[in-house]
Length: 234
Ligand SMILES: C[S@@+](CC[C@H](N)C(=O)[O-])C[C@H]1O[C@@H](n2cnc3c(N)ncnc32)[C@H](O)[C@@H]1O
Image (cartoon, rainbow, N blue to C red; front, side, top):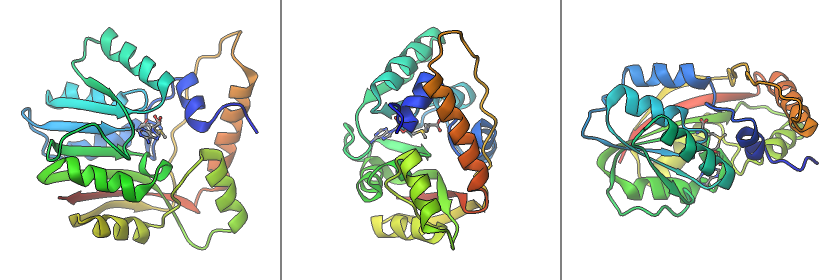
């Protein structure tokens, strides 16, 4: 087993937009979203901050992010500072967020809820959203039938807590109390993007091994692990 978790690997190599469809998917989702300047938007598990920067740059809205990975936090703070972005970075877990009830107009979760206790995380998103606020999820979804061995391999590599099918994701949103649940996209492919990294002489070979394993796993699981984009309202 590697000394690095999947999220360590993302943070060490500064891999951004680590969600199905990558950054292009994010841009295409927000082409049609009614984000206004006065809105308060939260990006949960923001990673390197690509989406938060894009949202603030495009809509000039108030953007907050929350992350719990120490290295990722350090890097994202530095990145926002270097771009003079006025994005507030909060350290904490989506399972227990340091925000008051009814704070946000819009919450985006890109490839984060599968990594945590979905029930707790969705309850928290519901709590901190304003009434009629929007939650948008872009998550991996499992396509049945999937072999148990493949499921275990996927769960272990990504350290997933949730391996939901599209229907299970929708049920979880319903159980949490969300309404107007709308499937914007469902696909049997994760539609991963090529990872572009700059190799450096001192780069830890364990990270390169993980990169290879990641690319291989995504190929192997294509058609078995897909993607769902859901939009719903509090
Ligand atoms: C697969 S990455 C996706 C990152 C980003 N949303 C993106 O699309 O590039 C998952 C992110 O969620 C963060 N994360 C994992 N568990 C979390 C938790 N309980 N609370 C907040 N963030 C968490 C990880 O540190 C990581 O940055």
